[in-house]
Length: 536
Image (tube, rainbow, N blue to C red; front, side, top):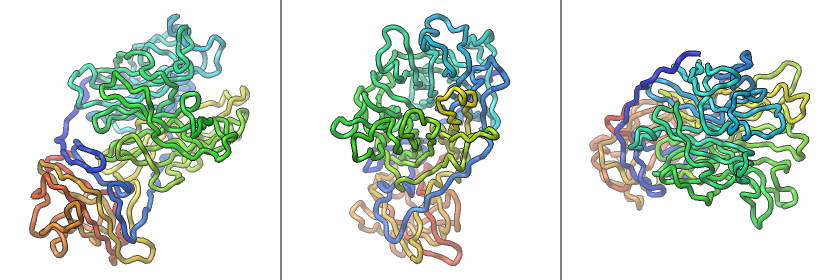
């Protein structure tokens, strides 16, 4: 364990002011049209999706401190959590599980747990740092007296029975004491607790450094929700998670299984009590088969999403439920891929596709025992150089039987993609040519350029039209833009006689034509608009 080093470096990049007609103003260093986003790139000919599968690192990047019986995470390190690249450091917040009640909790913290002894105690939230995002170090915070010692990485909060440490750094926040924002789940049996608090709801906290936190009011939303996602998009804060009856029902007031919902706030203090349907899977046609105990696929802990540059890419838990309570150990959970243009409503680019498979990326096993893996998503998607990283949790599902609970365990894992290559648009098998049109975009008023993330880019041309598909002189036909290079993550688009920044402030559509070459079938992953001073 090493001591925390204050003073993380940070820089703020120049922002574009591109406007996507279907989603409003986007202010960020990059505006992105993602190939798997059928709202931004809606009209296609002879093209289909080719989804990428991430490379899963089989070894975990972070494991519980099982050799230390006094560690808060001596049983599990669960990634219902966050990884941020903050200046030159990687920072992680996660939630711990341990055996045996912490005898040093003050009375107001102890009474939040059930009165009867528990096999597993959840919480507190914990913190770690890394130079490379692979090798992590628990930071000695000295905030929580835990089993006789303050030499631990636990975060002090007014709640002891907690889960889900979801953190953002809010660069638009004028008050430095509120620069870091967190939402976390808490559960309490203390006197006067609401039904939502007993079943689990979220609470907000703010911080100047991400280490010392001040919690807000209890239960800003008086509703059960188990959360996995927290982000800011288009000027509002969004918390995503799972709900079920009695706080959410399917059609006709029938029971439903776990489904994904979202709550929003415009100031991080006042939250709408009403929720939105974020991502839902079909319920069985027979209402009698519905409910959290039904043996059908459900949405586990909602959607956790990442702003790629005007489009949100997220993961949801594809929970393969057991059909009766005693068979909890039969449950496994994969991760599915979703996108959104408003930050609230998500859809699958390819319905039913398993993006990260629990079978292909299993939790660390125990020799001679066969436990299912449950994958868990969180605020763990980020771009680092030429790589998109996906941090996620792996939970060993030992079930609820006492004879197996000794093997309960959770670890934090990593999967990677080439930057922004979630999936591509490519030619139909046997096709030689294809094309795609974008939705209308009001181009930035500041200086910018265009790049393509693709393969076989020497077989692509880029034309610009007005929003009624009329070609713009100098940017189409014989004057179409050419993509520099044969492939790459950031291939510049150049027009032979004009500069794209001449169209600043105008509404345009982008028309990309693709043809098969001797070198490769073209694959389009993303189109970027970037500021001239963008720092990668």
